[in-house]
Image (cartoon, rainbow over all chains, first blue to last red; front, top):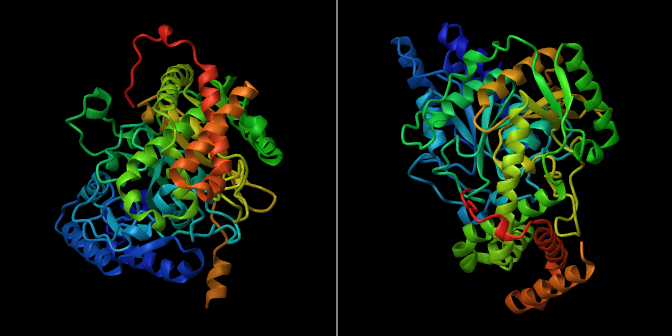
Length: 461
Length: 60
């Protein structure tokens, strides 16, 4: 059941929140030993929240669009009274006394916090314990590894993620779910364990575009203090999903993406674009709005420096408690001269302008979401130019770098039965149009994926 | 990319790593340091002079 279906069923009295939460907890019990998507499952707390929300519903009060709907929270967001580890042994026993702003907004919209989903250590790219529910030998992606795997395997209808490089879009693609990384700054980052301030984005992993819209509305909440008009007065994204009067105009970025994609994925994306064109979309060729190698070099520079700065105090005291790859990132980040950081910021300003202009000319830009289907787990993160253990970031990085909103949409399976996805990119703060375009594409493609986890359940018995 | 500039930048970064983190750590970090040096040289080589960007905006 998707979040919107669950919400409607609860509102209509066909389902209680307690029933839905119990069903999710039961699914977690069946699958968790194999998939390992959760750091903490708050059985008792979730059932208490659900009971309270059911009582409110009976009394005729609804909190919001997610009333009674269980959600997973990536273990990088502070949760009041619930352990928040950021995937690090340093915070193994840290229990915040406050909710992150996004979590508080979800609760205000009626969501039930089911527990905390696995993040890689400090949201970097070391392998998590989590497995891909489509094939346990493969990576679920990261750093929002647990959220992607939990949503795909129907442990919860939706979960939060975060993205500084590709940590929402890539795990969404690898697990066959919808992932939305909104515009930089649209979602309040208060209470989010910082990774890299100027590229950190809260995000969403769900099963449909409609759910992405509902979650986004809930997570934005009210931001009357924002300096930006479009953040102070966000639209009701879910109201506009069917509103595209005409088929969308889509800018297909072959350059960079199709050259770097695996052969199988490239062929799949070409045929997906053909399907969209057959359904009426106007497809135009768009050049990548910059030098991809320069964009990636600048993004890595910013990430390493900001990550080193964010960790500086803790690292000085507890460097031995970091995994080798994360420790390396911090040590190298501390050596990068300030001049390189400033040059990287200059590159970003230029790229943001050219990327925004390219996105403004169409309803959405389109590219493969990841370079290939999810790889088999393994590899050495310190090896020269190694593919990170949660997959290659380079297809998602430009949109974290520029802050433009990006959405991963499942588009099919490869020959091994692993998910493939396209990503759609919008102009800054144009999530309404991006979601409308994504909903149109979702309808045109008619792809809805469910991993074959029933075999795992049978084996577990 | 200027290969001489790249080699010089790599050596400087590796030397700095040795002084800061010790020889053993610097050797372990060598691949990451070399990649970082490539990024630094690419950034230096690819941007227009700063006089063409007088109103540089440093906001995130």
